[in-house]
Length: 386
Image (cartoon, rainbow, N blue to C red; front, side, top):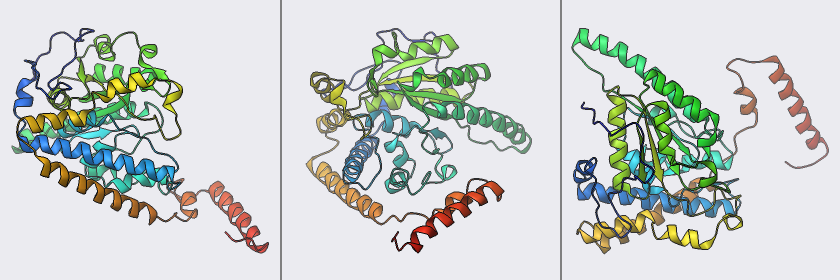
């Protein structure tokens, strides 16, 4: 696989890759034009479908939380292009490490949206088998997944070295794989991100660091977190950094495709800063009106990734009213299915929580379980219904 050289290890402060403008017109970038030109109308419709269904699911999950059916929800509305573009660039053998907001990516990796809600309803610590989907469990500990991702990438690197030798002996070759580590601009201030990039650079680990810079770390604006574009930091570690319009699904897909090719070709890590915006709250426990103004929100609403791609599809005759009407119907069907699945979820027996603390039975845990059973029995003796 050919490695495309990028100019320098960092990026210029004003440099940002954009292939689709907010008005739906195509742009140009000689480094990435070939990637965008290779996308068929069917693929572009698929990108729009991914984004539209993810947004409808997001809206339904928010409604479920407001109605008391979920303990919490983390909206991703406004960030669909960054997620869909990067996820669709991945191959089946690649492995993804998310934070807690990568809902569109999870759906693309084959995880039913109802499985995502098990965690937020409190009936599961996860909801899916990561190995089956190449998509790790959500990580709520800020930036911890970047360390996990680099360690996993280093493991892939070593496995592939052994496989290459075995393949040379047998005449068969294993498809090279890479890792994507997702994190937000807020997490970029954590030491874990710095440490993970040091290790990734030192060992040329096949990992792509993908930062969704949505401008706010809860209530702290990006300009307080960093005085330069985050992509510039890559130069300090000695690997490429690219800044891309995170609301441009074509550009995100192109840049991520290139970065993954680099990683799979043993050229080392890449940092992508996808400049996007969360149109809603940080979580359903947050009130963004306390720290940002309506003028800012209106500005970014004009850069919404869905209308942007819709304009392109209509302008190029790749989609019509029938397509969008059908997609609206599909979104409503998805929302109905998700709601029914959530309402049907049953709480697991609390004893299972004690059973899964250790791989083998532990006397202290057994003692705690006995105490809890005695405590619960006390309510029954007093005639209190559970």
